[in-house]
Image (cartoon, rainbow, N blue to C red; front, top):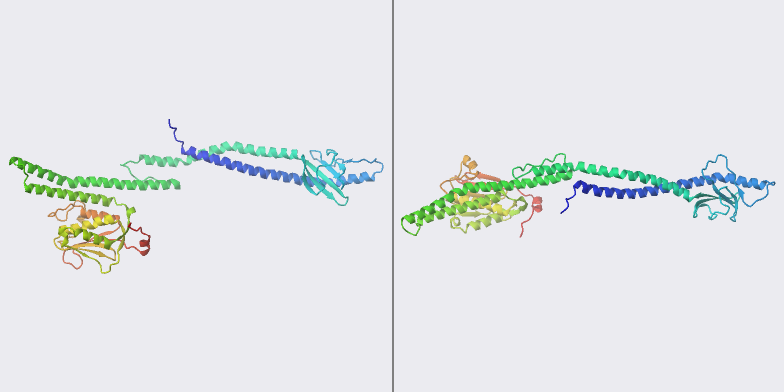
Length: 469
């Protein structure tokens, strides 16, 4: 059985405690080194002060011994106690001659000379730390020894107390880290609860107030994802609704025409279907095909992804569309492409494929709802695509109404009520303005539709993604 995953609080607490213990151990080692150096310094300072303090009494004893003729001579003198000396341990003092012999010693000092050279300063032997002091007036050397065991005992006691206190604090510190980690992660649980409550019917943005910076960034990413999901679901629902609205009638028409043709053939006792009925069914199928194409175009326009945007040359786009329409007989003599006098590119930022869908719909509408010439042109300032026809045009009310879905400009023609809606959706995706001018400037009648884009500065043009070649 696979073990349950560890909680985030545990995964945070464990490395934090390990890191704290590591830092604590390093800190303790540094503190121990510092405390030991301070202990040694204090002992050395006391040893130096004691040596200078004991020098005069030791010399005084030697001088008195040399001046006292009644006292029999002896090799090593024993130093008497100094009044006011409260040293807890007996002093280890030797006063030596230049040749190394012990002239005077304290009661606790050995008879044999210390294992230290007659040289001013400190020297460590196996058991003692010895400080040597020279007095040139009497040409004598004073050596005062401090047992290393005493220093080790003091150092051990101090470090043991320090480490004991720190060890007792470690469990407390680990508990505090665990408590703080759990407390701070409650906001993550709150964010997780909000995400769990979201569904296809509830895609409201997450509440991100009072969240830490990192969780706020995660929440913003989730909100962006839900917004894209909401748009995708809207496109899917709209496609289903549009398909149900647009395809019901042509499907019923095709089915009715075919049933009628079959019934007529059966009544006449013939195996052949009338050409008129077959032609009517074919026309209905063509209508169905066109409507399906428009529905797919609308779905793609509304689901446009701005991440695919790059620089688009409107002159190149218009030239390509004109050449495409010139392949059809109905547009060969009616569609006129009027490029600007200056052949320099007209750059905008957008998606070439969806802009082609928009321009294709504009040209197709103009060819459908007018009988005369249709003019395609490109404007520079501001950059725009323009399609003009000489049809009856539209009044103000019709110009507003034609942008709605399932609204036909002229019921006498085969219309799908989606062409201008597709163009408007693509214009919105490109932050472009859709302008309907009826009549066009300088004309008595007709309609001119413009798709006006924002002007790209040189800096924006240089920074914009370039199309793949």
